[in-house]
Image (cartoon, rainbow over all chains, first blue to last red; front, side, top):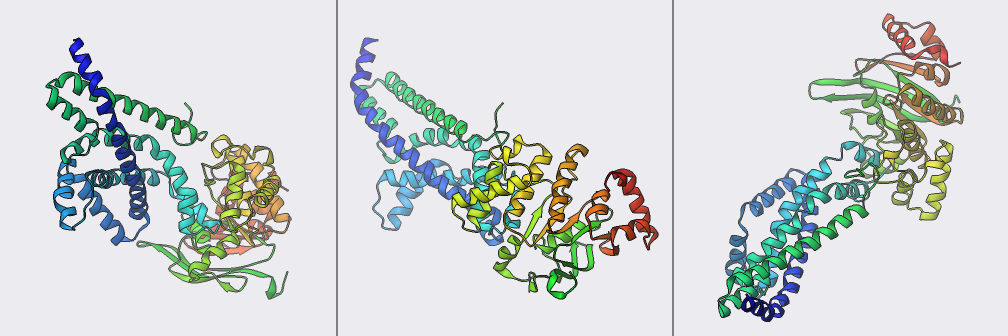
Length: 225
Length: 256
């Protein structure tokens, strides 16, 4: 038992260095997915049939591929083929972010469509352009409605991030794995990784719930109850 | 109020179909400054569609609309300018649910007119005062009664200093107690000289406020005229029937 503890204590600083890697990978992918996903949702709803058709295709493609397949395609295929010398970390962020954007876009699309056309009609009747109406009236409401569903994306990306171990990103699991191969103590070390992931998940969800409470509006969306 | 110069709105031969159903079969009329015209008629005769064709929220299949002699139909991007001049009030209020009453009125002043925030707030408060809602300026739509919400939506449209106000069944979603406070505001507006087009079943309001009642049926104007004439001496049996039904329901005697 004490032997296990010693292994963990000795390995912990090394594993924890992966914390920053994991977190920046997850947050960057989340942000990339947010920006692209939101644009996709707006394009899919308000764009012409060519735009919304291409977006449906994009969503279908990125939702249909397993994470690992996408990572391998990018890391061993696409980026070398294009002659791009990009780190595994950057490729991981792009792959996770694009995939997340496909999922996020549908969360936002649902939220926008739940608004009812009255909001848009009222905005247009006041002389707002479509663009201004989307920015000032539709999105502020849709984002609030989307928040509970969108909060899924954080734990999904966090857990998915461990898959980047396969292309050698020095995140938490990769580091844990390296120590295991040296010490042959899988149980305490993987358990350590598990605890780190669970704590990261807990912290992130706390922040999202705080955000939900902060942007809450009386009687609107997920209002007081 | 008799020269051509007083003409604010001209609507000519508006047609609109949804699929195979022709909702509007050629509607024309003119509105002079300060006039209140009330559209009545059975449901599904295209009264609301007509209002929306005027500010182009619904695009008519054919026909033209002029505001102050400038054509509104086929105006491209300029439509946003004309819409500012034609305030609209909806049956379901359509207040922006994420904004307080004050910000509902303020936002188009800031985002469309480009007013400074402070100036916009002042004007918005002024408009809310006009409809008796300044005390509720900080409340969100969900915290307002239907009547209060509708009054805020009137203030929101008024804030753009429109030349004409379009009311699309403004009291249909309200219970009788709340209807009164909205009609009161509208009456005040009409007496203050605002030009108004009102789709409503409130025959009492029409009788006491309107310069002209327009009776629509099946996508056409069946007949129109001053309230006294239309109510007491309609040309068509159909108009008489409909009006007497309305009078029973909405108690013509309540208003003087």
